[in-house]
Image 1 (cartoon, rainbow, N blue to C red):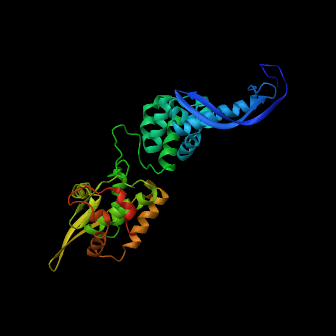
Image 2 (cartoon, helix red, strand yellow; image 1 turned 180 degrees about the horizontal axis):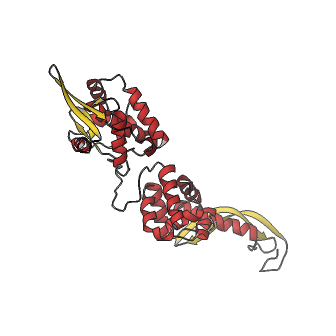
Image 3 (spheres, one colour; image 1 turned 60 degrees about the vertical axis):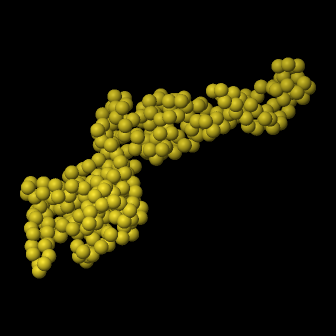
Length: 322
C-alpha cells in the first residue's frame, strides 16, 4: 500500500475518530485507519475502509433508522423467507439482503414500514393484502399458513374490512368456532350463565397465552359477569337453526336456563392449543354451579374495572386468576 501524497510504502494503523455525513446527519465513531509514516496522510486500505463504512451505516441505522438486527428479528418473528418478506414490504430481495447485512440504509419509506410492523405486528395483514398482486396463489396460501398459524394471529383471513382491536382479541369473528365452542360446552347440558362464563374464560385464557382469541367474540360486563356481547341473539339464532336445545325449568324460586347441544362439536375447526384451552376450562369449572362461576368472575379485573354495559378489553386476560 502506497501513500497517494508522497508515494511512501511505509504505513501504520491507528485508532481514528471518523466523521461521516449521511443524509444530512453527522455520524461520529472510532475505528482503525491506515496512515503514511512519512507524511501522516490517510492511506487507502480496502479492508479497514470497508469496515469503517459499514460501521458508519450501523451507527446511522441505530440512531436514525432501523438496526439490521431488528429487521432480521422482525422477519424471523413471522417465520418468512427473505423473498416473501421483501415482497410484503415492497422491495427487491437483494435490497432486503443489503439491509439485513447492514451494507445499506433503508430509505425513509421502508423505515416507516418496518418501524410500523415492529410497533404493531398485525399491520402485516394489511401489507400482504395491499401487495396481493405480487404473490402467486401458492405464496399467498403459504403466507396465510405462516402468518395465521405460526404467529398467533388466529383467523385473520386477510379481510380488508376487518379491524383488529383489543375488544375482539385481534381476531376476526369466526361463527363456526362460536357455534362449536357452544356445542363443546353444552354436551349433555349446561346452564346458560355457566356457558357464557366458560366462553369468556376460554377466549381470554387463550389470548393470555397467545395474543389472540379463539372466536373473535367481543365481551361485555353485565350484572352476572362477563358475557359475549349480544349473547341473546347468538343463542336464539342457534336455537332457531335447530343446532342447540334451549329449555327453561323451574326449581323452587329459580329459573334454570338449560342449553344442550344437538350435534357433536367439530374439533377439526380448532388448533391443538385451542382444544387444550377448551378442555382446561371445562375441567377447571366442572364442579362449579352457575352462581359459583358467576361469583368467581366477579373477582376478575376485567369485571371490576369495566363499566356496566361496556365492552371488556382483552388485555385484562393477563390478570385472570386461572
